[in-house]
Structure formats: structure tokens, C-alpha cells
Amino acid sequence: MKDMPLTVKRSIELLGLVLVGTILVIGKDIIMPVIMAFFISIMLLPVFRFLRKYKFPEIVAIVLPILLVVIFVGSIVWFFSAQIGVLANDFPQIKANVNAHLKTLSEWFGNISHISTTEQMKFITEKSDDLLAMGGKAASGAAVTLSSLFVFVGLLPIYIYLMLFYKDILLRFVFMWFKPDHHPKVKEAIYETESIIKNYLVGLLIQVTYMTVLLGGILLLVGIKHALLIGVIFAILNLIPYVGALIGNIIGVLLTLTSSTELWPVITVLAVIAAVQFLDNNILMPRIVGSKVKINAFFAILGVVIGGSIAGVSGMFLSMPIIAVLKVIFDRTVIFKQWGVLLGDERPEKSPMTFASFRKKKHVPASAGVQK
Image (tube, rainbow, N blue to C red; front, side):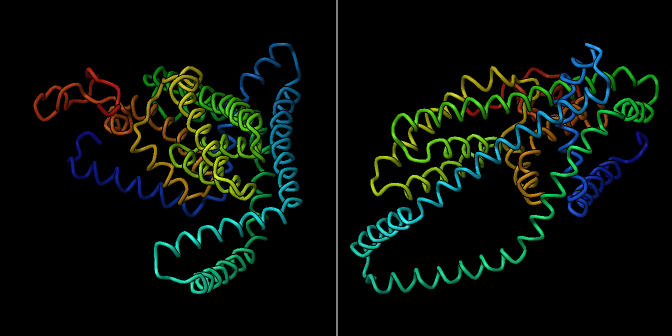
């Protein structure tokens, strides 16, 4: 590899990226549950080790953490089903509120344009019919999607159990790929990868908890209807970098509009979300998750978009930990070190165009990748 021309090396790297992307697109239904199970099994390792330390049988030490995950996910599903029941009971009031908002919007639009209310209603009716047609097409594929979801969820516990049970075989497989001289670096990368994944996932669970309590609690005290539902939805969507917060704001506003005919609840929801998010981004989350691996904003957003296009919502959630693991691996290999630099947010203090030493594959003085 070292004796190859530079163009050949870069061509091989690009072909490798294309091959990996193709495999992910074709085999996403198989690969994504395995990746998800890998991350969850890493997160459950401390519990497994704790139980083994106190002489629990290996099977029990594996099954108990998986049961905790199942109970946690089941409680979230129960909460959403209960909230959907509340929304269904309030449907007549929601319909009346939506009609009131549409009437107000129609009058406002009529005042600033020459389009009559009749023409507006005709346009809305046509678009509503189009949406219903699209909904019918989507519903026709709902059975397939639902069955795929059940397969995904059903396979996760099995994969997690087997990964914890056969973890020593998997580790030996990894070490056998490298020469004995490289084993210390491999061991270091494995430990750091495990630490990053645990810190990241546990930090996200803590983040979801305190954002739900803060956001839902404050909105509940203010008197916003569906406050807890707004809090949970925003806390979960906020796990998707950058994009999730925007979607969470939109859903929060829509839920508030359907439950009230006044404008002040919407402003209150947006203000509370902005305050909680500021507290989360600048004070709480940096202290909880830490900053062992920093990914620049460009590749964080790009990773979310690519992950979503490949594997939907699960790909969006998994994009950040996957990029973090890749960066750990890239930073410890001479061949791919430049990719680790590309993913990171440490900018050289001086321009590589001026200082030749900043063009080499070695550590350089850097500053955090924030805009000045």
C-alpha cells in the first residue's frame, strides 16, 4: 500500500466509501439492527460486569440488563399510547380549534391578497384530497413497515444477548486482523471506543430524562395542554443533532395550536423550549457527555442526512455514535489519519497554506471549531 501511487491510494479509499455505502443501502434491514444491538450491548456492559463481579451466573447477568431495556422501552410505548388516547378523546375540540385557526388565517390572507375565501377553500379542499390520496398510498405499505418494525425490535434482544455472550470471540477476531506489534494500539482504540459509546448513550438517556422533566414540568405548571407529550417528543427528537430540535419545535407548536385558539400558548411553548435548549446545550450536556471526541457541525448534519436517507429514523439516531467510532479508528491509523482530521472540529491555529508543518499527519496546535 505504501508503494502505490497517490492517485491509486485515494481511488481505493473512495471506492471503499462507495462500497460501504452500497452495502448499507442494500443490507440496511440486516445491518441496522446489528449496529443498534452493538451500541446497546456496549452500554449494558457495566451492568453485566457488575453482576458477574457478585457471582451471578453468566446467563442471568446478560438477561437482567436486557429485561431492564425492554421495561424502559415498554414504558415509553405505554406513555405514547396513553397520550394518543387522550388526543383521540379531544378530537372534536381539536377539530374546532383547527377550523378556528384556518378561518383566522383565511381572513388574514384575504386582507393582504385579492384571493377570495371561496377560492381559498377550494384550494384547501383540493390539497386535502391530494393529502388523503397520499395517505392512502402510505397506508397500503403500513403493514410491510409494521412487520419490519416488529422484526427489528424482535431481533434486538437476541442480538444483544449473543453479542454479550460471545464478546470474547468477537474481540479475538478483531485482534487477529492485526499484527502483534499493533495490538496495544488496537486495545487502546477498543477501550476508548467502549468509553465513548457508553458516555454518549448514557448521556443521551440522562438528557432525555431531564429535558422531559424540565420542559414538560414547566409547560404543565404554565397550563399548556399536552405538556408532557410535548416534552417527551421534543426530548427524543433532540437526540437527532440540529435537525431534531427544529422538528420538535414544529410538533410542539402544532400540538399547542390544536389544543388552543389563542396565540400566547404558542409563544410560551417556543420560549420555554428555547430556554431549556439553551440550558441543555451550554451547561448540562457538555458536563454530562463530556468532549472526548468532537465532531464538526458540517459532518454532524451531513451524517444525520445520510443516515436518514439510508436507514430512516434509526440511521439518524445512530449517525453520531457511528461517526465518533470512525473518528477514533481514523485517529489511530496512519493511512486514514486525514479522515479523522476531516471529521473533527479542531481547526489549525494557522493556515496550512502558509505553514507547511500544518500539512503533515501529526498533532498541531488547534482551537475549537466554533465561529468567531
